[in-house]
Amino acid sequence: MTAQLSKKSEAWSARFSEPVSDLVKRYTASVFFDKRLALFDIEGSLAHAEMLAATGIISAADQAEIVRGMTQIRAEIEAGRFEWLLDLEDVHLNIEKRLTELVGDAGKRLHTGRSRNDQVATDIRLYLRSAIDDVSALLRALQLALLDLAEQHAATIMPGFTHMQVAQPITFGHHMLAYVEMFSRDAERMADCRKRVNRLPLGAAALAGTTFPIDRERVAKTLGFDEVCRNSLDAVSDRDFAIEFCAAAALVMTHVSRMSEELIIWMSPRVGFIDIADRFCTGSSIMPQKKNPDVPELARGKTGRVNGHLIGLLTLMKGQPLAYNKDNQEDKEPLFDTVDTLTDTLRIFADMATGITVKADTMRAAALQGFATATDLADYLVKKGLPFRDAHEAVARAVRTCVDRGCDLTDLTLEELRAFSALIEADIFAVLTLEGSVAARDHIGGTAPKQVRAAIAAARQRLG
Ligand code: ARG
Image 1 (cartoon, rainbow, N blue to C red):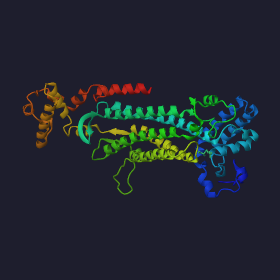
Image 2: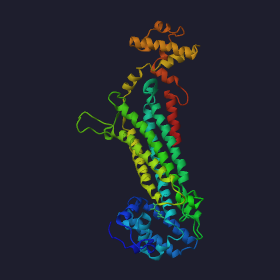
Image 3: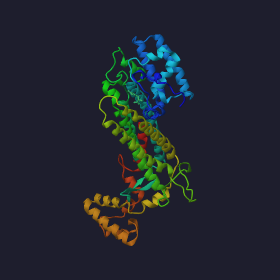
Image 4: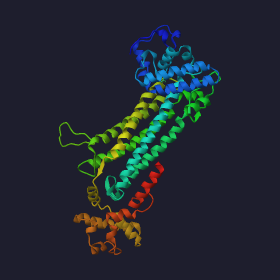
């Protein structure tokens, strides 16, 4: 930080008899992190100035000067030449001060009918709206990558698990589609959250509104907001829209984390279902043989960080009386970090999905262990007239025999199988194959390759 400014240069200087200490200055300043809002702050200010001129609150000449100054400031910021000053506390005062330096009195008129309270609320909403649009595009890209993977493996058989025990055969494509569903609901949540983010606080001023004849609808239209916030106290004080975003983000990360956990397990040499491209893994500094799934592990870890931000923001809000309190300045870092963590994670995962190699033989071998088609045998008996509970018991006895002998159900002869139920006939062997098992689950949401391919086509259609 250069150029210590005298107290006189600060926005509220005349009221104070002594300057704050350097520590207090640093403690209360937000410019180091809220300068990220700069371009949104300028966009909001330009819309405000346009309205002030259109309503005759400032002159057209002043508005033109404000546009000229802001154009230069924007260029300075984009070029990294703008000098951010700690003494000017936050992004808003830094920009306003520079504007006044550049255009004089017109710059001083910009803040007419406005407060930093409605200004910052507007900036965050503009920022978050744009972040949500990025997140939505990334969720779409991830879903498309998973759909490609699902399509390649619509008929690749793997064991499906419950309780981490082999349950029934499924296809890898079907498994990937489960994540497509999760991310598609995440995208719905983001779109829904966007509706409540996209409302204009500006015009609320400090808390009670303003005495100037402002036109809020006009500003809303200029900035692309769907509507204006209907109550000024609420507009400047609540950050529920940011909390809602963080909740939706925590759910995205939760889904990413579940997927990560599976990728890590699948890549373990003890399981060996997949390999992940080297560019997402690292080695060990001591064990030369190691290839670690760092990206999924970190994503699983970063989920905790995003969950923490959600709790942080909820806690920030819960004790605040109406209307604005400085506590709200603490909303930015958790929100920015949530957006950064989420967008980086989604970007990497969409790429990583293209770097997953499926080891179909290992998956198949695993599906052949653990009597994955036992339910198919029970269903077969039910279709021959046996009540399900009796069928369940007959198959349980057959499985017990196989466990004792160390063989699979399909290793038993027809005669041996018939000892468990006389209803069993030669057609049972087709039923007990892995292919027969998955193909038989032929309904919407089922694992049959035919259904998986239909679900992929439907998902592609929805994604447009
Ligand atoms: N930097 C402040 C924030 O992030 C801007 C609003 C300050 N308003 C005030 N009355 N001190 O919330």
